[in-house]
Image 1 (cartoon, helix red, strand yellow):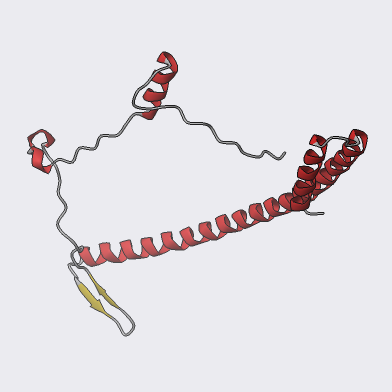
Image 2: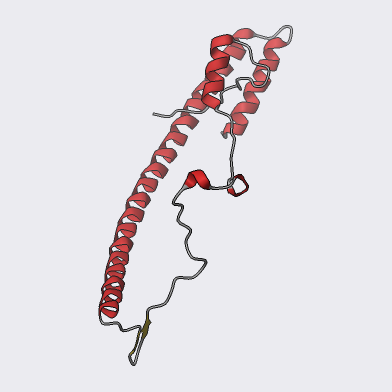
Length: 163
């Protein structure tokens, strides 16, 4: 029986309880059977979930292993590039051509970086000011006073726990 069917039968049982002349013992027995079906279904869901969680953990471990391996090679590439750059700078060599590669020292792209030396002297038209509400302080104010005209505490959601 599917969860959809269990939910449907539960709804029908609840409707039967409201009808006159319903055999309450029969409905309670059917309800007990439905609870057992739900427990069985929940057990199956739990097993599939546990299997999926184990697969997720294995995939995360593999992702970490591959990320570590990638980072290792990135460090090697960075080291090689840094050593070549430093050697070329030390020898005042801006270009090197080999049969396979061309090395060159060039300026970085984009505009030259701006270094702020005296922030107090920046004119207001060059400042971006962002104002955003302090949600934690507003929540504390509502908790303390119980009244707030500009905000309210929302309803907390629910979630399923499986252990």
